[in-house]
Length: 299
Image: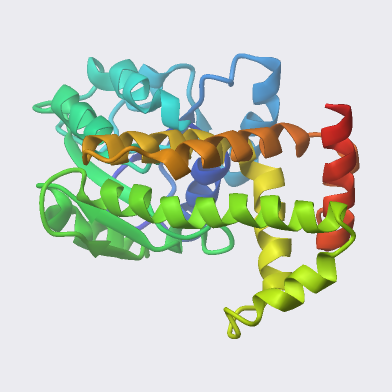
C-alpha cells in the first residue's frame, strides 16, 4: 500500500546505496520514487536503469526532472561529486523539500553544501554507519543539523533507522569520517600485513602470532572480510578516505596514516577489477592473497 504521509522521494545518484535504499522503500509501499544518475545517458548507465525499472522507480531525464515535486531528496553520489550534485538541483527545488546528504564527505563539505541550499531545501547531514546490504533502507543512520529533529518522525514512518547527533550540520559526517580512519585503515593494514606474510610463506604463523596480543579477534575472518571489501570497493573507499584526510586537516591534524590508507585502498581497487582477483573473493584469504600478489607483480 502507499503510505499516506510520505512525500515524493527522489534520488540523485543511483549506484549501490541509492538502489538499495530505493528498493527497500518500494517494498515499504512508497510508490512515488524517481531517480537520476549522470551515467543514465551513457552505456555504463544501462545497468543502473535496469535496476530502477526492476524496482518500479521512475527514471528521470535529468537532475531537474528527478526533483520535480519532490518532498524528500536523497543525494547518493560519489564523494567527489557531492557538492556538484547539490548544484545540479539547487535552481530546480520547490516547496522547501528535505535534502538528505548521505555522501561520505568531510564536515566542511557538508556545511558548504548546506549553505548552497539554504532557503531552497531543508538540508540534513546523514552518515551511513554500516554496510548498506542487507538492511538497505533500514541500515543505521546518524543525522545532524537544524532539520534533524523535524525529519526524524517522517524517516521513522518510512522504517528507516536513525539516531540524531546533537549539534550543527557536519557532526554526523565527523563521526563517519573519523571512524573511517580506523575501519578503512585496518583494512589497509590487513592487506599489507597478510600480503607480506603470504609472500614470506608464513601466513598461518603470522596469523597465529596475532592471537598473543588480540586473543578475542579472529584474524582469519578479519582478513577474509577486509581484503574482500577492498577488492570490491577500494576506489570508492579511497575517495572516502580522502574526505577523512580533509576532516583531519579541518581539525588541525596531519593525516599521515590516512594518506597511506588512500594509496593502499586505491591500489586495491584497481587490482580488484582484475578477473583473476575477483574470481577468488569467496575462496578465502590464501587464494585472494595469491591472486593479489600475482596481479601486483604484473601491474
